[in-house]
Length: 118
Image (cartoon, rainbow, N blue to C red; front, side, top):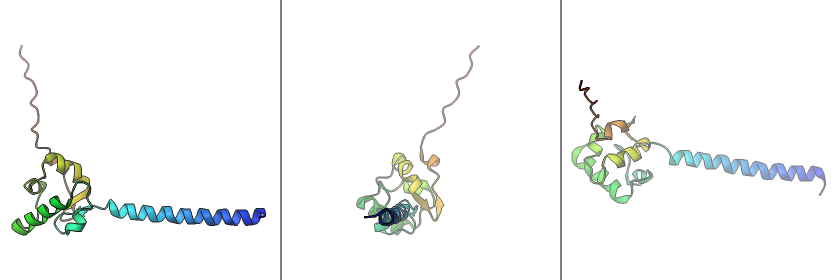
């Protein structure tokens, strides 16, 4: 094999690796897409890390009984979704296309400042 053939072969291998890398990024981007919990089906809900088949079905059952989620507080009414769970999945879900305000789910009250006793 001469130098020219070697360079062409290297470029061919490099190009294939580059295309595979780009395809991987596209697929990963789709996996990290934000899921609207008001319109997603069970399969799409299960793409969210932390939502398995039981939680996905619970979301669908809540929607069927109560209608669309209007706030994060509604999601916390679904069995298995406490403040920690919502905070953990908050960056991966939306409600009617709007990002979830995870800070509103903490359930903690502000700590009062100590009083100065002179």
